[in-house]
Length: 85
Image (cartoon, rainbow, N blue to C red; front, side):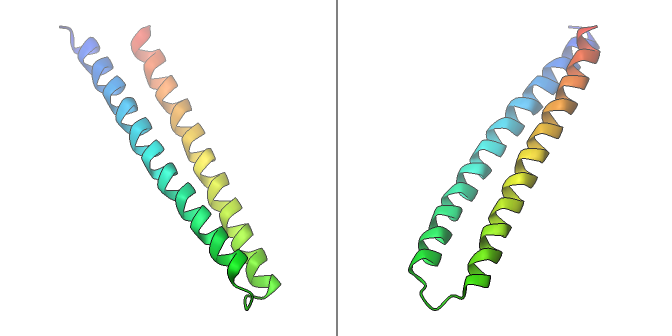
């Protein structure tokens, strides 16, 4: 086995591990979002500004999560293209 093929296998394993870990984290965050939405819907004492802040917070972390995933996919693709040459 050549060093290049070993490194390619390592990168494949790291990508697989990252994807699975990221998906697990995303599931936890999505479930937490649902819990928070239910809490906010039932919290009549929460002012509208508070509700808006929570909605903005949720949108921000969703955007950050998708941006992070896209960047990681691009970087894995770059590294894989190096080893495929």
